[in-house]
Amino acid sequence: MSAEPTTHTPTIWTRRLQILVAVCSLIFTIETAIQNFVIVDLEMLEHTMQLAGSTPAEAADDAPGFLFGFRIVGTLFIIGNALGMLALTGRNWVFWLALVVNIGQAAGVVMIPPEVFEATNDIHGPAGLLPTIVTDGGALLLVIVLIASYVKYRTPWARARSTDRRSPATATRRRSESST
Figure 1 (cartoon, rainbow, N blue to C red):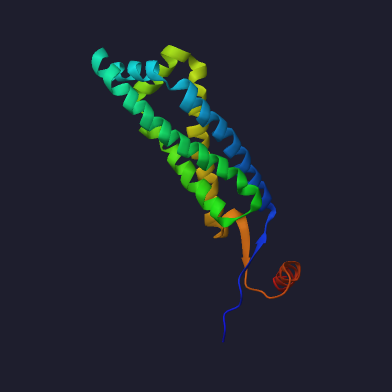
Figure 2: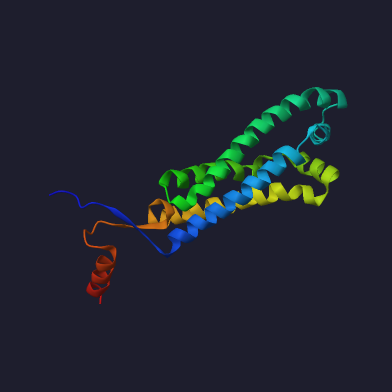
């Protein structure tokens, strides 16, 4: 006996999840660009390094190389978040890319040393902390939502799995009739 073909039919949550990911990706792209190219600069990094115990001379020597690497990584996150806006296409690879990118950004919640927040606040005030809070905290929440949807539906984008060859509406109606 051959296995029934599996189809994935949209649920009420499918489009909502895709829109959520697309909107978050847009916001995270903008916020990451602000963080990467406006908030984090040589002055902020030197101040961070001094708060962490480096001498002013050590900080001045180390900051340019760190900034270069930081901006490369930040640019990769900008690209990853921008691709997340393709969530509206419903492609599975976009779901997995969005999950991986947001896991990486959510890691900032625990991986960013406290001196970075202190230096940012010292130089830019509380408004300077917003890009990190929005992006890293928002990414953590989005990761939780994406994982929860995958656990519930066992498919990307909260689609229902069906092995019934009939149309999804007929299969749903017949299943509900048989359970009464």
